[in-house]
Each structure stands twice: as structure tokens, then as C-alpha cells.
Length: 233
Image 1 (cartoon, rainbow, N blue to C red):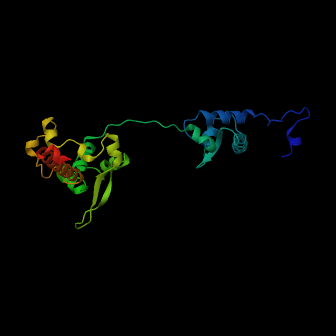
Image 2 (image 1 turned 90 degrees about the vertical axis):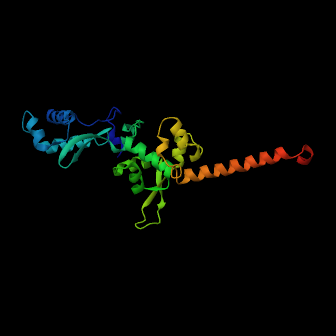
């Protein structure tokens, strides 16, 4: 657009003409409405008959370059934030939610028995659980699919993630309390739990590796103690 057409004689920008009373009324009606309004509803609120379509077209043009726009969706009119400014309206907020009992129990079973299938989790818990229980744990990125079990049907197995260790400030799974430690703390009845199957996956393997390391270190200490100082050199 030519600047000469925009500037008035006194070098002042020429703004659009003022809105008519009918246009101002329609503007106020749509602005105050709790939901988008159709033409009939707008017309029913006006004090006198007017060309609503013409007024709406003009208002739409007036607001096209502003922070809020007049939009028509499914033949209903409303004011909306300009699309290119919608990022200013978003707000990130951290909401802390407690896990349900089912989610906590499911997580505990996966931690100590991984890799474990959904059917195995339900068998251990003694009750079926909703699909969203696993979804919640995976959304937190504490649990993830860990391949399929080599049995008929090839069910998905679930394992914990590095984020799980990080969240609970653990370096490895074997840092978790053992069945004996949980029993000593009064958290479980260890007399009714079979140590041989408690932690049958990664947790169990890490514990076994730790036991081997302890055995070798004990042997080293024992041998060192039997050598003469001269032999040690």
C-alpha cells in the first residue's frame, strides 16, 4: 500500500472509521458470551433489526490484525486469541499426583521380578488391573517394554528404566532392599515369601553377582592373611 494513501494531509495516519452503534452492540454481545453464538442468537439480543452479516464482516476485518480475532466456527461466532500469539497463553505447571495403590504394587512387582509380563503381574497381585496402570508408569518413564517372552502368544515383558533409578536415587537395582531387609523393617511378612523367586530377573542377577564379588574378596583377604610379609613382596 502506498504511504501517500495512508497519511492524511497533516501527515497523520488515517485510522479506520468508527464502529456504528449496531456493530458496537454485536461486538459487546459476542465478547460477553460464555460460548460461541449463532446469527439467530445474536439477532435476538439486538434492540432493533440490522444487517448482522455485514456488521460481522466488518468486525472480522477490524480484528484481523489484533491480538484477538473474531472467528466463525460451525456458523457460530466468538473472539479467540490470534493464532500467532497462542504461545503467550500457554502455561506449564508441574502437578504432583500420588500413584494409585494398583500402580505402586505393579511398579514394585516389575522392579523385583523384571522382566515380567502383564499376566505374571496379575498372578502375583492376585487381581486384574486396568490398562491405564501400566500407561501411567510408562508415561512417567519408570517402566518400558522389554521385549517379548518366548512362550505361546509372545506376551510383552516390562522392565524398569534408568529414569526410575534416577528418580529414586539408585545406582543399580541391587541397591534396593532385599526381602530380608523388607521383612526386618516390617514392610512384608518375609516368612511367607520364597527368597528363591523374590526378584527373579535383573535384581536377582545383580544380587548374585554381588555375592560372587564378596566371595572372591573374602578369598583374597584370607590368602593375604596367610602369607608372610616377605612373600607378599
